[in-house]
Image 1 (cartoon, rainbow, N blue to C red):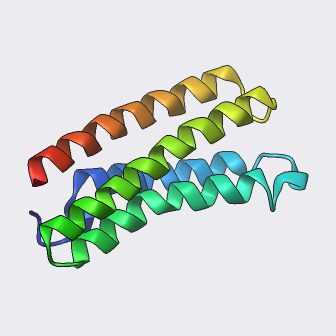
Image 2: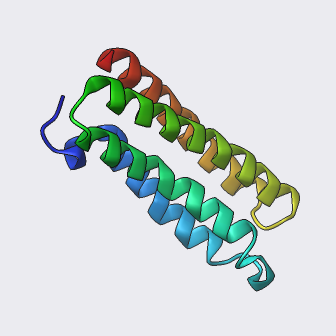
Length: 117
């Protein structure tokens, strides 16, 4: 395992995802500020945050548990982006772009979990 969490590819990719999600949700309707925007942002931040927290726990078992939490948040984002598309806050092209990134990150996260066990 890497000595620093910020050297992990899954952390780097999830951090980039956070930045891009913040940019895209800034364009949502202001009436969603405390609803959908807040929920999406909390869920996406949870992905790299749990990687960092798990990495710092010092045990493989704890680290894997936090990686599973990250994976759950990633799946939550998939649904929230589907909802955003269905509400016409994002168009289909943006949805597809993010869905592909999320699917790739999910595969990376699953592989990392298996590798870490």
